[in-house]
Length: 262
Image (cartoon, rainbow, N blue to C red; front, side, top):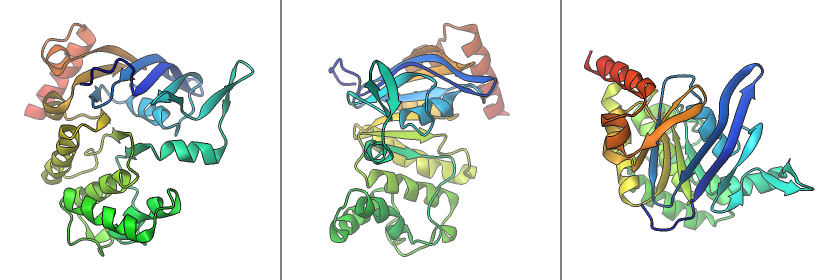
């Protein structure tokens, strides 16, 4: 982890409700440059919603998120937080890459076309530069030779690796992963986790919502356990996964381990 004491991602007092359902309750979390933070917890604990608040796919009811010192999706005006114009939010999102459970690739475009679409249309990169970078990324995620393949012709693991390459094509400051292996066959989970391990080893700042406890143990600098819309405890993988302080964390981990062993 970096020595810099200023977090790259700052989540301050974020709350979110959907009707009567309170999903996040004044969540605070800092993520530093080069750090990998894995967020674990039961379904419905608010993990994915928290991640979506970071790039303003969900608008917090209270609190705010900053990336590299810049408030995301809102600005202070007359002592109130007001929404940014759509064009400004789009610019901010170019710096926050996100990989979803479903791959969200454009089915009518080849793998290569999927990857260059946003750099050309949003960043205004030349097509030649975007193509060069896209081919480098496809080699990096071990999809060389698949440039002209359509998503439907790829396995789930290949589609998710293409989605990672597409997110990286924007050269983001941080990457968000929302349970990126949950929709995959067990045989292909390892392919995606291998790419994510490489990203972590190269110092990319990452927030990862995951049920892959072994991955969190191997890769995370910090693990945060969420339940009931709040972070119950956080610390190193050894602290949270092997010697949790909170009884709720111990209960969750015992169930996860028993399920995996079963």
